[in-house]
Each structure stands twice: as C-alpha cells, then as structure tokens.
Image (cartoon, rainbow, N blue to C red):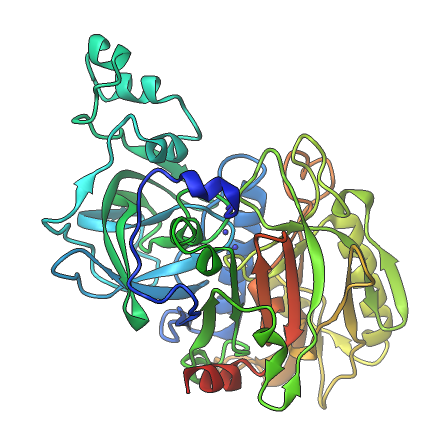
Length: 478
C-alpha cells in the first residue's frame, strides 16, 4: 500500500501551482513492475512475492512502513525540474505518505539480487531548492519533531533558532525503514510535471543517495502532508481529495502486465457510476482512523464467506483501538492479502474441506512458493466463491476466482513431471499478540485486481466496483 486531504491540507507548508482547469479529472497510466528474466520459475516468483508481502505486513508493527522492493508494485511516472528530468518511475503506494526517489550519486547496498532500477537516479536541476529546517514539511518528514529540534540538528545557531531565523539551514536527512531495507534522504522542492501536462511548483520530495536493498523510490498516496494527493489538494481539492485506480488482472502474465492500469485523480462521484451504457455500482465502507498510523487507509471487516459458510472476523478487524491495533489496511504496495492466524486458519480449513476432498494436496509446491493450500488438478478445479464482508450497509465484495486461486504449471523447469497446480492466494499474518499495535490485516493489490478502488478522502470512505480495467483505460483515454 499509502492523507487527511480535507481541511488539513489547506494550510500546507508550501504553495503549489497547477496548469490545469480546476474542474478536470486527470487520467494517468500505472505500469506493473515485472521482470520475467528476474524470476526464473513460478515458484521463485511466488516465493519472493509472498516473502515481501509478509515482511511488509509484519514490519508495520515495528517501525514506519514503506513500499516493497522492486518487482512487486505498480509504478507512476513523472518528470522533475526545469529543464525537465528524464521520466522517473516510482511505486504507487497507498500505505505511505512521502514521495522519494534515488538521486545521483546513488548507492544501493545489497541490491545484487534485486530487479534492475526502473529509471536512472535523478540529477537535481538548477531549479531545485533545499527545504529549510524550520518548515512544516521538514517536521512532517521527521515524525512531527519540533522545528527548533530540527534546526538544532542542522547546526543553526541558538540565537537564530530563538528568532526563527534558520531559513538558510536545510532540513536534516530523514530515515525510513522497510520490511527488507531502508534509506536516508534529504528534502527538496522543485517543479513536478505529470503526464497530461499537470505541473506543480514547489513540490516537496525526498532525495536519497543511499538505500539498503531498495533501488526504486515511491510516490506515497497515503494520509499525510507530504503525500502526492495532499500536495495536489492544497490548490485543487477535487484532484487530491478523491482518486481511484483499476488494476488490470494479470496473474503474473508478462503480456498482460504491459497493459496500463488507470489511475484517476479527481474521480467524480456521479461520473464513476456511468461507464458507456453500463451503470456501475460501488460498494462503500467507511475509513477507520488509526491514531498510531494515521497515514493508513483502514477499513473494518465483518467476516469472510467461503462458499455458503460465513466466517466471522475477530473483533480487532472491525475497528481500530486507541493504540493503533486492528482494522484492515487497503494497500496498493502489498501483493497478497494478510490475515490474522485465527481467521486465516478458519478460511483455509473451510477451503480445504471443499477442495481437498477432490484434489491431491501439493505439499512440495507449498514449500517452494510460501503459499497454501495448493492442489494438483488434472482438470479445472472446482473452488468455492470467496466474499469479503466489510463493516456497514451490508458492504460485500465478491472476489473473482483468479484473485484468490492462482493456477500454473508445476515442473516447467524440466526436472519434475509437469502437472497443473493451483494455490490459495491468501497469507497468514500471525496471531493477535504479534499484531498488537498495528493493522490486523492487509488487503493486497493481487486481490484488488479487476476492481476500481475509489478513495474518497473528504467523505472518508473506500469503494469497490468490478471493472474491466483495460477497457476502462481505453474508454477514459478516448
């Protein structure tokens, strides 16, 4: 995954300027980062992806979460500076609230096993300026530390700190930790230009010269003053207060991955219901405020249905307590959905009861992919329908089969016998004690495929509607 973009953003730290009509929505392409050569077998791909999903989810209960490493997420491209830089590709992440990117000179430690970078490190333009230590942007990057502390760290003299005269002292480097890496970065301001010629002056971003195991930057879309929607919202609320994306279904097929997924900034609530001659119905559920992790888009989950059996969710998934525990984070930056152990075990047991009676268990595949249960099947396996029941108004989302049951050819490496196999694409996130102080579950981007997901930050609700995302892109583009 990703910004209280309502009244909070009206006092943003810097002024932005947009070169578009205030009534327009903006359509931007998202591309999924996927290297077929980097992943030699389906087992390798699934093992790496499931490990990253688990690392990201569990790290949220320790430090500030950030997007995953390369090969796992959807990317957004833009240029910076004047004259404009070459296009920069960053991961779209609804689970973090800062925009940062690799800057030249750039060193990524322990990146030998990573997929190659998506774009070259940025050479700062002559128009880029350092963010001063006394700014609210600097405070936001440092977890709301007082500007006086930050200016002292920047070695501003005491008398200048007392008189708030530290404009010439730049914001100190800030640190972010990942599930499997970390970075330090400096804050700068420069002009940002998105596709469709949207230009934002004084856009604030982090410039990282050194990272650990993280070669690609992120465009944070979560709640927070430094996120991309927040900075758009400061002058054009409809652009930042409401956005949606529709992730093209791919099932790790590299040909399908090449199709762009639409990202719509300023999504109009009335227009979203109309798609050609089709009226699209959205299922909405309210966002939950997380006092410890305010940048999360959290919702409540009542239960999960497997076939006709409804499995109630534990109480901690229906709400977020004052310690920041509970709720379900809707996250574009995590691949697979993570569930607490008790709910996961109940879902798996019911799924296995219905599927395992007719199909041989593929235990060896489970060990090599990190997923399960998996089954061998000589013909199309019959699997029960899975439904997610969110809190409020009978909000129910029916998952397409391909969103939770991945089928591929086992033994395609030429060593073993080739057999069709299918795996349940949900993961065990740990027991409730392990999850204390953080989200109780995460709804990953694999389960969001084929849905338009709307984030209404003004009304604080999230909506889901089944869509043919590639057709939506073609329709909106034309």
